[in-house]
Length: 60
Image (tube, rainbow, N blue to C red):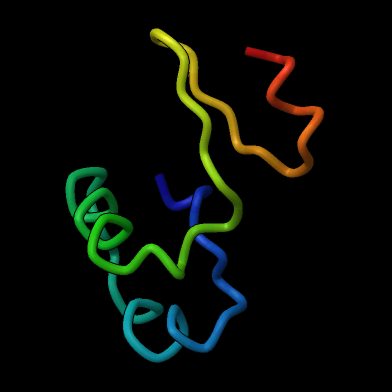
């Protein structure tokens, strides 16, 4: 889950850098602080991808 987070933005550095979080904790942090996500996430069935550019959607 930590791979989904942009660790370079000030919001992450200020509020989360000092913590070691479980998967459930990361889900909660992302849910309540969506600004820390690297890119949009696309879901289709059981497949999930990070969308870095619009063409990535075709991978689903």
